[in-house]
Amino acid sequence: MMSMMYEGSIRDVGKLLSLLSSLLNLKVIGLRYVNKSLSYGELNSIDEAPLNVEDVQAPSSYKLVEEGASGRFRHSFPSLKYFLYPPVQDVLYIGRDFSSREAKVDLGDVALFGIKPCDLHSMKVFDGILMNRDPYYTSARSSIKIVVVEECVKPSKVCFCGSLGTGPWASDGFDVAFARLSNSVVFKPGSSIGSDLLKRLNVKRASDETMYEYREAMDNALKSTKALPELTALNNALEKSMGSGELWTKVSRKCVGCSNCNMVCPTCFCTEFFDEVELDESAVRLRKWHGCLSYSYGLVAGGHFRPKLYMRYRHFILHKFLFYPNQVGLIGCVGCGRCITWCPLGVDIRETLWEVFKSVS
Image 1 (tube, rainbow, N blue to C red):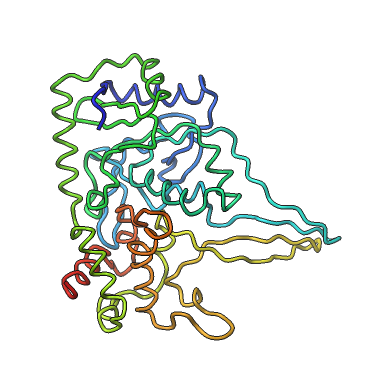
Image 2 (cartoon, rainbow, N blue to C red):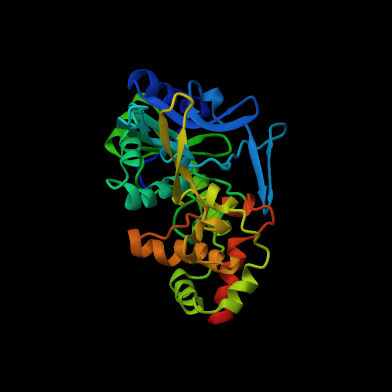
């Protein structure tokens, strides 16, 4: 955490959003809470940000609370993936005369606002996999000029970012981070751009008392999100488990292969392509998300790569913790807990990892 930090109020968070949109002429993108609905989109006012609503999460359970809410919003099922790598994307247009043109992505200049440290880290993972390889992601990612992060003072019951070093505070890759304490907001710059923005806000240097409260809150948040075995030992255990169909059949016993976890995971990136013919005889090629837990994912003309459900569940876990590091040098799980919350059977990846760890260690 940076030593030079500042304090202000929730009004200063609103001023920061206004600076981004009016002064810097950026399109401010973040989670919007409008008409009791959450989605990623353009924030026109701080009143649209989910700052006065609380999400209550548990395995297979999610609800938003307004009355009596603490205002401690963590996240919902949309992640940055919805903005940078949308669920359905046009990639090619074919005219009735068989002429073709590629789809283009032009989002303008964007500021990401109020994203969580775990989702910030998911963007690093995506950068390693897709940047300068996938033209649509590359274009969307290149549109981002400023990143504003909200640190998690009180993580949810499904969060385990502290085990993976992806939260609860932001360490790099941002311009400004803010954390809401009991009676104030702590700001910290992550770049020279961030420092300039905070100077424009006229916020004062954080007092010793405020810094003490901040550090204590972050320490408690870190402790509450330490939920996995030590990572090197865990990865060794996962490697040893790869050939044990009996073990993976046991740990996947509650999974039904619905792929909800793939859809809400901020780092799952598998897709498939569809061609759709329009009434005017033109056609469009679409790219849609696909999930490795789905039976059709490994199905090919000559058979099936992973016909058993335990094989697909094992692949999902091993891809995050063993295969991603080989691809991009980062673990593919960010500890956001979405897969736990949005699993209809409440399958808990933390329990899976502990069960594997204890079985082979």
